[in-house]
Amino acid sequence: MSTGAGTERRGLRRAGGALFGRRARLRWVHLVLGGALLMPYWMLSTVVLGALDPAHGSLVQVLLYFAALALSLPMAAVTALVPTVRALEGAAARALCAPARAEEVSTGPARSWAARRRTALWYVLHVLFGGLVSGMTLAGAPFAVVLMVSPLGGPAVDDLVRFWQDRGFPSWLPGPLLGLALLLLILATSAGLGALLARWAPVLLGPTPEERLAAAERRATVLAQRNRLARELHDSVGHALSAVGIQASAAARVLRSDPEFAAEALQAIGETARAAVAELDAVLGLLREEDRADAGPAGPTLAGLDDLLRQLARTGVVVDAELAPGLHRLPTAVSRDAYRIVQEGLTNVLRHAGPAPAGLRVGLAADRLEIELTNPLGPARTSRPGGGRGLRGIGERAAVLRGGCAAGPTDDGTTWRLAVWLPLEGAR
Image 1 (cartoon, helix red, strand yellow):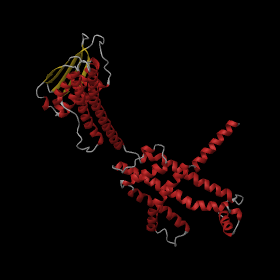
Image 2 (cartoon, rainbow, N blue to C red; image 1 turned 90 degrees about the vertical axis):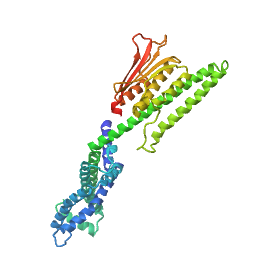
Image 3 (cartoon, rainbow, N blue to C red; image 1 turned 30 degrees about the vertical axis):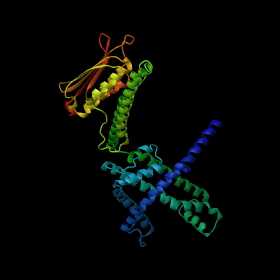
Image 4 (cartoon, rainbow, N blue to C red; image 1 turned 45 degrees about the horizontal axis):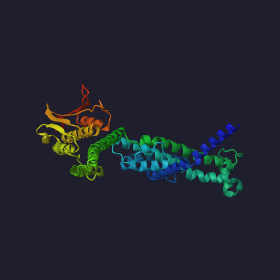
């Protein structure tokens, strides 16, 4: 019994919330707003149809009123083709209609005819349902109140009761009960029509397939930009921190025994830090979006490889470099990403192999740029893991330029080899 009573109470609470809750009140306001928007169209239609002529009988006048309502809807649909109507209706639906998927309701103007037609259909439903609920509220609510106070008597109340009894209402039906039923009918109609609009709002006011595709492309562009900035930060700052760490450790070890070397290491730390700050400022400049139209990619190119190799030499990584002539004439996008690839590869040497010799070859062959970086593997470490962010970033850079890369130990297990190839024809 207790379980059944609890279920019944919960059902009554849900029904009460659907009729009297905050969501129901907001939806009623939304519908009344639709009724207010209907009034100019309806008044113009009544004038056109002559529905206000007192010479018409009551039945004819009521029929003309409904005809004016039918004539109002096409006029409302035409005005709803204005692009800004979707922005206004979307904002009102989000705030008052309380749709289940409010984030799918657009608050921007309709930029295609498909979106405008859907907005017109929504607007027609809004003003139609709003007109019905507004009419019931304005006419039915006062009448329901009169019926509920009918036991108090009075000439006006008695005449009204007799009016409805003469038209078939049973005399035994008490006025308060009839008035309460009428109020519940108004509330139920408002709740039902409001729920229908809330269900249809994401469909009719939501983005069209073309708009969804455009939004997905914008999100993909933003994500690609973020990934590129993340790679730039990882390569520049990661390289600088690795170099600074090695140099600081070396300076600490020989600070007393070889002060001159320690001073050189500290000077190299300062130069590395200043270069990293300059690159960081260039990358963060893109995030500020001060000039999106002219915001180009930041960072050094292959023309700065000599500075990079000299910086690494101070950390103990001696690079045997073989650089092809004409690298400064490469397309900027290829040259910049190639520099970052070399920088990340040498940083990996510094991070995983320490101050060890490395071989670098940057060559041009068959309309593509080839990069090969090798370094010996230590006896205690026969291989290195290839799932780090650095190698993944190298692969992403190569893929963006429609190139490729391969990394891993050689067959004899003594050397780590990184090979990257980047096409030049499509990047020019």
